[in-house]
Image (cartoon, rainbow, N blue to C red):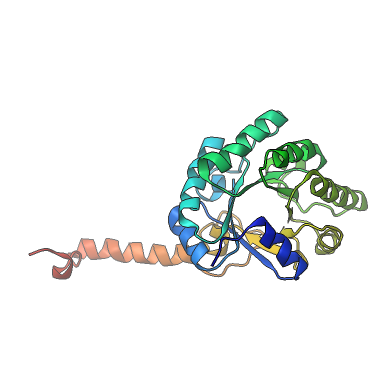
Length: 266
């Protein structure tokens, strides 16, 4: 199967076929996600919470993102890999934004980048695309803005806020984004944005009308328990399975049952 590309994004929207997307942060899980046939792997700055154990995504650095993206790119044979721009890797200037975005493609080998924001990052998106760096935009709940937003809250609930998100969606499209991620917004608003844009929308907590969906892998697999957002559906409980296996291992060592003759050399 050929690698998923930006052209496939647009083709799927045109043909009304859903785009599948999932996060991954290392080689083993990225390999599993790729083998499952997922279209797109996002190396998200969510790794700050689900891998590094931080309270939010803000501490994640550009070097850390590159490190994780390299592993994912090595594993992904068919899925498109997108690198997530971490906090303060693009906010300070357009020049910094282009330079850091370029690192994802040049050093890690991703096919595109994602960054949070609407009209305030339009110049950044425009400059990146002019430098041949494909950009996925991200509006709605933007986790890097949690202090301004007062936490992880649904966005676009008032008429004015909804109007601003619709405006931002059009602005990032006009700036050159090939897709836009919609996070934690009312599903009717996401439907309207999806219908108005010519580029695909990817939803996370934005209802079923988006052109595609993304979840954090550790949420989907039941590996992250600190909190579970309303929009998450757990498809497995790997933490429970892992805990059970490790406890059995511990008990077998203590009882002298492991290693047995089968696991020993003669």
